[in-house]
Image: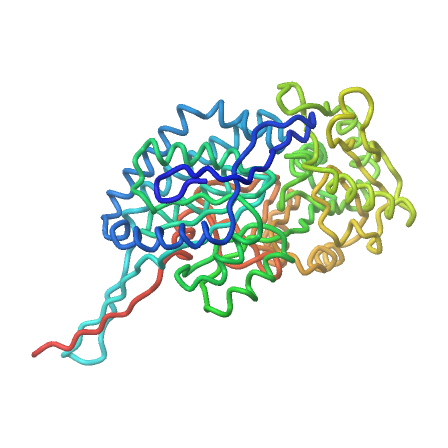
Length: 473
């Protein structure tokens, strides 16, 4: 742990295991409620001086963070791969993405604008300013152990907030590397605090009135619980929760482009992304051609240890993740789905030491199958046949989730109709990865509230204050 500018050693430790090999990667020290309370107190104390700096001064710190991450990006990428299993190429992309967030918010720190509001009477002057909300409790999952931190800490620090950060217990090592960088660039004591451990940390963050805002990325179930618990202190909350993304291929689409897009969306990070395609809807007139081509390409994917640069896909995070995928595939097969490729756990030879599942394509999928309404978080692509635009929009929207959605078409009018009809926070048209530093990332319905990224990412860390001054005429 890193509290008030000091690395903390405790008697309780936890092993971090490589899901590809079963080997212990490293051992970290863990803390509980008392250390969390201490970190929050230090964070509150640091808030006054940190928020009093100019945006340009805070931005200079963030720029130094980006530069130092650039120097260390290969070792951090390897750390990500070893602790959570994604391929080394995906991990390198994540580190570059994280660097871009710190660079972006280094610039945005000096662009927190207010307004001058025309008064109703001649003897008043009205202004609106924005100020940092205060101490932020940031909580992230394991699937993007560095970039999730960057998306929260970048904007929070830019506007003047201080942060108590709790990464996932599954993959905290990239966060440790990030906080080493914070120390090296001289971020003032108490401004950033790292806590690794049990839910005691989260409980204290939620209950402590000194924490003014919660920023959480994770499952919808946990997000709902955190919203309920944060209500006692009426904390500000932003939530990036689960998804069940539809991927629609219309009859006028470029089929080869759509197949490549579906594979990129579905199998990135072994399908362990909240924005992964979860339901692939294909028009009945091109269903056979699309299914055949997708199965052929997926069958050629190389599965292995993410440290092998030739691996297209790595392991799942743990045994529970494999069991969930197996349960969904078994249910689909019992209800009439056809396994076009894959459909089994990989246990032979080197696979036996890790948590591997074959990249899988299911055909003849129907709406009553569990996989069509429960987030998979694994490498299974269910293909569903549809007939009309109206029908597929209704099916795509028939979910409590509303994070990412995708569709392929060459019809300009359809691109507007469908994108405006889909009940999702993000839509990719012929684009399987419509994500960038400068865009607002987030969902609607039970996929969350608030946005991360771009200038929009600042707003959740700011309070609006109106100032009215009566003057002499």
